[in-house]
Length: 210
Image (cartoon, rainbow, N blue to C red; front, top):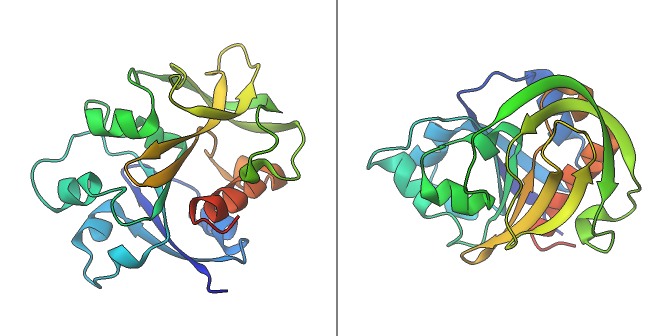
């Protein structure tokens, strides 16, 4: 079976580059293509329609004007590519209704705390993304913000008193699956085997492989 062609879209937020690359290199089922949002939108190689999964890890704060970036985002969900909205990408485009609808959170005002000890509970153990997982502990940044609405299906939660309760959830956007995962700040969690399992199985589920 061919590998899952995966665009990993970044921009406007620093991150541990070696740790982040190592995370995706550790998923044998995928070929990943790291790129900033502007390159994804420009699509100089004319390959955007060929991706199976789009991983958003960007932090753009300004709603894009008419142009390539806006057009590319407005087209999400039309060509069959599943969408993973990872960590700070959930906070991107705070005033854009389209992104709020994509994430399933209408009020995306937030606070944050780094280096927090989290207990992670599994809500839907039957979901393919959760296969083989049991509750675990990890260290990551947390967000203090609203949880997704009732039109999302919950996968992971935490009892951390200052964190949003929901850590991972799924929903539908147009014709495609969407997975949102609040976790993913730095190499403390990039290297966590359970986090890696969620990312790996999540991408495979988004691509319709599991």
